[in-house]
Length: 144
Ligand code: THU
Picture 1 (cartoon, rainbow, N blue to C red):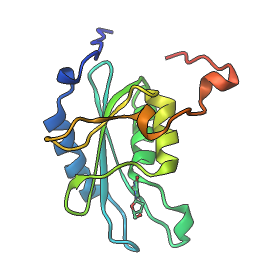
Picture 2 (cartoon, rainbow, N blue to C red):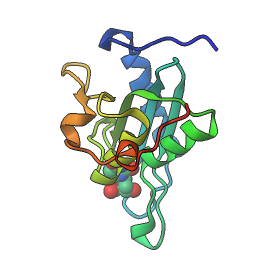
Picture 3 (cartoon, rainbow, N blue to C red):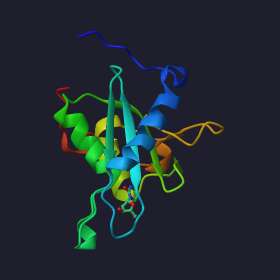
C-alpha cells in the first residue's frame, strides 16, 4: 500500500479534519449530558477515521468520542494516528479527557497532534500526557 509519511504539520488537512469532527457530533448518543462530542483522526497513511460519544444510563460506562474513534481505526484496518480533532457543544475544539489521552497514546504515540483550533498551534500528545505508560513498557512491539 502506498504510504504517505506525515512528517510536518502542513501535511495534515486540518480544515477537513475539523469538519469531519463537527459532522460526527450528529452520530453522538448523549441523552444524559446533552454534550455531543465528535472526533476525527488522520492516519499516517492518509485515511480519516471518526467517532462520537456514546453514553449509558449507568453514567460511568459512557464511551467518549475518542473511544469510538479508536474502534473505527482498528476496525477499518489499523495504522497510526498522526492528528486528531475533537469538538463539542459549540463545535469548537476540546482537549481529550485523561482516559482518552491514554487511549490515543497507544495508537499515535507522543508525537500525535491534537487540534487546538485554526489560530493556535496543535498540542503534541506528549505535552498532554508526559512520561506516558505504553506498549514499550510491556516490551510489546507493534506489528502495524
Ligand atoms: N467526552 C468525550 O466524548 N470525550 C472527552 O474527551 C471528554 C468527554 C464526553 C463524555 C460525555 O458523554 C460527555 O462528553 C460529557 O462529559
